[in-house]
Length: 276
View (tube, rainbow, N blue to C red):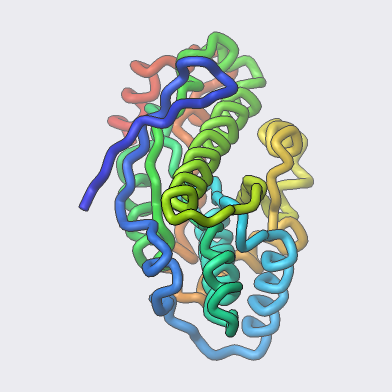
């Protein structure tokens, strides 16, 4: 069922984040059988194998692994890769004690909810997450209250991603705190492990000088498993993994429809969504 909780960010005073979990994120769910349908193609197999290896090298099975997720093909592919790598690590563990320790970690996709995200995109994101099997949390983000974002004068993307990654860290830290509390109750002694953030930045994105959100990603040390492959290769891998949005049109946020200097207010964003 649906569960809502308040998350307190210790680094930001009384800041709260409301999280809606659309499915269970317990360990048993994480190591369940994959729902992704595999197609046959030698080229695609090699591509996905390389992506899984790269993702595995980035992740820590004992960390809070959090995907900045939008339901677009790029972040959907990353969610599938991170979930697969995390689950495979658990399934390949032969020592019961080692497996118990690995379950200190977690994996989830986090979808930022704001007036800039159309309802159709939210519905798609839920559908794709269910296909992958990854736990999905939906959290409201606060960039809309930031005056720099509202001015929409060239820095809105940077501000938006900064708010997003800060929220993701809050969610991940809360997950780890819950895990630590669980171990204290059980009388075990969990180790401290990091929070690892992932995004769907691909090689084509890195060549676009207008993507100031990449600076925010760098500031938060976000990992990008797709940064060595093109958008076409992203779609190839997503199709191979059976993701339903593999060929969906790009769907940037509603704020991107506004001309430079047009205020990014909730009213303007809602009007854009209604028009589309």
